Image (cartoon, rainbow, N blue to C red; front, side, top):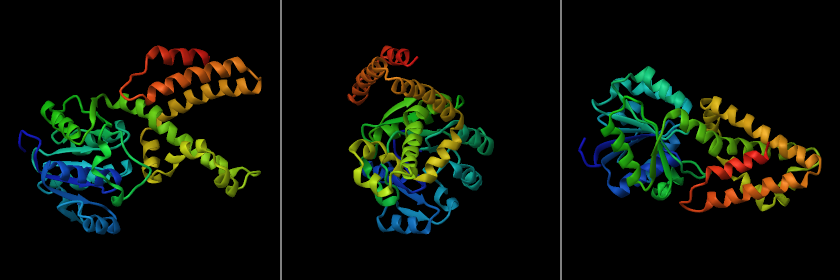
Length: 309
């Protein structure tokens, strides 16, 4: 592997939205001499070949990772264990393995258990995506002006962590390094809980006895449509995320439920002052969230939490 950001061969395992976008971005920025791709589905492999996602699309994991300097896993979290076991004996000396998973603690434990300390696994998580899936959905610009979080082991080699950092910066992302535990708690509230709520509100609407499904479709206001857009996301991926990040997700569900009960009580008892205070403070924070490059003051969160007590 060369000192500059130029790999001889990068293997991408999983050619859905993220995997295909990475492949296209690597090709666009000429980061590797060759890119091999692998997908479990024959249909996905055929599409990947047709749209020329990789230098070569392989039908086996072993062939895909052979002689690769860098391996990027872009599959559902539940597949990691099998992938680690399948590729363990087919890895080039000095290879770096990374991923794009939305939960880290469990997958890092599996990697350490199966691959051992001699094989460098440096997890990463690009905070990017759309509700679409499949190799046709990928585009090279997906990661531009997005965050990517890297969660290395304490024993990870600094030079290899820097290579993964440079890779994501080259793809257009800003990079943050944190512990896997902190990552999982942050994503539980910023991503996992919102998806869970979106899935649930669609399910609730569909189950209402006095409101037909045609009513939900016909009279959906923009709020319902916008809020539930993420309920179109890949169900396999999100099933795996909730199972893999179980503890953090359950903690956030508990906190959310407590805060929701305060709002429920305020609505029930016509508590206009409490509702107005909460809505006003959260509106201010929302404006700061969407303001590009602007941080949210911790005191703002404190005021909202105080109002929720």
